[in-house]
Structures are given as C-alpha cells and as structure tokens.
Image (tube, rainbow, N blue to C red; front, top):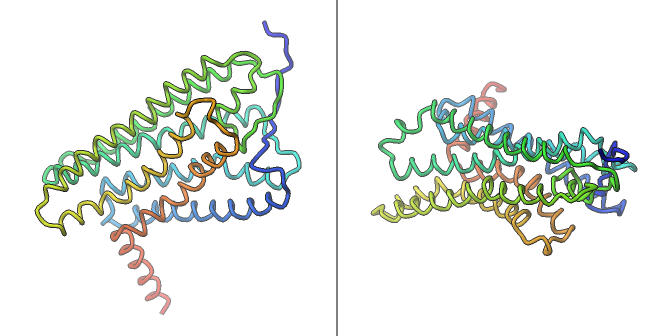
Length: 311
C-alpha cells in the first residue's frame, strides 16, 4: 500500500508565462482553430452532398477531416481557456480523458493515412480493378480497423498510467496532458510505461509510416512506366496532397517521440506538439481543397447555385 496524498488536479504551464504573449497566442490559436473546424467541416459536407465525391478516396478524406476536428478539439478549447485564466488547471479525471482522446485520435490518423495510401496504390497500380477491390464494405472495414487498433493502443497506455501513484508535484510542463509529461510526475519509476510507449510508437507510427513509404515506392515505379509525361503528371497529382499531409504529420510525430531522451528540449517539444495538434489539422483541408480539382468544382457549383437562387 502506498502512503500518499492523491493529486486532485494538474497545473499546465502552457507555452509561455508572459501575459502579452499569451494574448497574442490566444488570438492566433483561436483563428487557427476556427479555420480548422470550418475547413474540415466543409470537406465532410461537400463529400456527403456531392454524389460525384462518393468514392473511397473521399470516404477516407471525410474520416480524416472528422478525426482532425476531434484531434484539435481535444486540446485547443482547454488551452484557450487556460491562456486567459490565472489558474491554469485541469482536473485529474479531465487530464486522463484528454490524454486518452488525444492518443486515440492521433493513432487513428496514423492508420488512416496508411489506408489512404493503399487506396492511391490500388488506383494507380491496378486501375482496372479499383472498383472491385475498393468496394464500400472494404473501406468501412479498413476505417473500423483504424479506430479499433488505436483505441486498444490508447487503452493500454491509459490503464498503465492510471496504475501509477501521483503524489508529488502536479505541475505539467506542457499546454495539455501529454502522456510522457504526465508520467514525469509519477511517484515511482515509470520506466516500464516509457518502454511500452517507445515500442507502441514504433508499431502505431513507424509501422504505418514504413508501409506508406513502401506503398509509394510501388506507386512511383508504376507512374514512371506511364509512357506520356501528361499521364505521369496526372497520376502524381492524385497523390501529391496525401504525400504533403503524410510528411507534415509523421515528420513532427517522429521528431517528438523517436528522438533519444537526452535530446528533448521542452520548448522544442511544445512547438512540435502545437504544430501536429493544431497546425496540421488546419492545413489538411487547405492542402486537399487547393490541390483538388473535384472539390473545387463542387464548391464552385454550390456557390453558383446559391448565387442563382439569390437572384
């Protein structure tokens, strides 16, 4: 039995202690959050409204937008409140709920980006069999697998973290309840948790990332076999947005979780986490809409219809 006083709440240090910078950060993060919500919600609505976009690619893209809304919403609202509050606290239960949701949605996105890469692989490497292979039933199973796999991974980390006693400092040097930062406050050695985090990160992050690289190796090989430069350019353009999103998302996560422990700097870690938690969900809809002709056509069609009805 442990003789300790249980921590009832945690204090989040946030990004900075300077009041003037906190106001600036509040405005910038609020704008980014609103853009993220509007952009991702727009992709979901457009994908559902237009029958032209009822394809596997846009099914996965809608799932990605839904994930991004939840992923950024698991962090930003509480962060905005704390930026304007003197006491930047979060309850013990609220902290672990936030940690679980953030891990679950982040892991699901890792798997979902792999599913999207497979969709592009089938579209380019086996175009004649695309509709046969990527039927709605398979797409739903793949999406469900992404959610279930990430849920189980997050459940393991949450269960192991809840078994630790928290009886000393309750100050988290971060702007949200991130698992490694919370583990630092444990009264006992959390080496087992950290080891499991490392191996699970390899499975959840590096596993899908390596498979995506292999998939794109086959895709690039198939594109280079196309006889015309126009055909090559068209084939590559269907993958360009996904490649950019994969680079942004996986790049920051790998930088965060797969570096040697002695190279971690609190300020750098916070900025990297801020980027993949807020920046990436905001950029994803911009990347997909600005580079995607189908989405732009549908949006223009909706605007024209609205304009005609107003007349």
